[in-house]
Amino acid sequence: MAMRVETNPLEAAYAALLEHGLDGAGEALRILVNEAAKIERAEFLGAKPYERTATRRDYANGFKPKTLLTRFGEVTFQVPQVRSGDFYPSALEKGTRTDQAVNLALAEMYVQGVSTRRVIEVLQRLLGPEIGLSSAQVSRAAAKLDEGLKAWRERPLGEVPYLFLDARYEKVRLEGRIVDCAVLIAVGIEASGKRRVLGCEIATSEAEINWRRFLESLMSRGLKGVKLLVADDHAGLKAARRAVLPAVPWQRCQFHLQQNAGQLVTRQEAKKTVAAQMRAIFNAPDKMEAERLLKAALEAWRKEHPKLAQWAEMAISESLTVFDFPAAHRVRLRTTNGLERINRELRRRTRVASIFPNPDSCLRLVSALLAELDDEWMTGKIYLNLNP
Image (cartoon, rainbow, N blue to C red; front, side, top):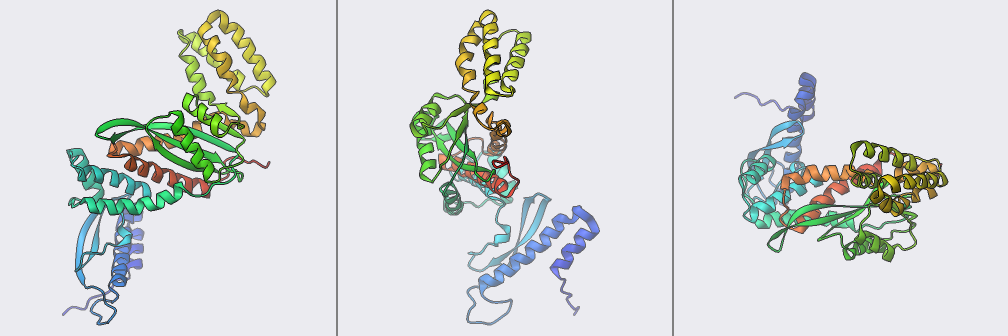
């Protein structure tokens, strides 16, 4: 009988990396995760292999191969089994909070009978070729993830001098219809100078009542010390701001303002001239010079672009609030462009689900993505030095 040689898993993983470099990362991952899963099963059983002990809770029942898509490509793991079937190694739990939320959105679609070929194919890639999902399994997984995300959304807030608000829309099944739901998002720059994602909410629209409820929820969590609110022009948001944060000045997003101005000018050459005039106003050294340049531009526009002049007199004035703040801060406060990364990531992630099966599923994915981004910002560099 040949002697069985036990290989140290750490040494085997190291050997795979040493021999194949990064191409061996998948093999190293397989070795280490398999070993971690075996150790976890032994702890779950309360006994080592073949050990007789009164603390044993169950018995090992071999292994089952499971192929998962990882950042190193497809890797086949050996998943330890137990007789009762009530064990799954945490080392193989599916990815990050965002990945879990994507998987759950698809799983809910599958369980509800939306088992289109596309959904099945994506689920097989993410969860393996054998899809044995039940509504109870999906509900348990959703509840586990939702608990942590709810705690993140309801965590206490503090002093946030600069507040940014934005919204985007996602398609959601609601009461038997597919509707466009608004995803309300709040980002802030804390007194420490770091950016934080303050909260998010799913609403049926950007009506005042929805923005007002969202702002009131931020205030109830302890939001204070807001010196400036940066947002796009929207009637519902403006009304909610006046009701909840009446003393806080508003900075209208200069980037979107410039886009709006371009739509009021027909000739391409004139568009370039107007854009240059607006850039000069926004880049002025101080508010007095910005107002002087605006006055001169308005005089010219009244002759050449009367519709633009009529709109711009009030609209551009709303975008000059930033000049009341320190010059070193202005570049970060002029627009809501800092939220564009969030919107790009949301677009990329939500393309997988396409249409969310319910509002909770949408909120879950959005919350997971924003919570991960918030973790990244919290541990990253200072975004704006508020104490130069």
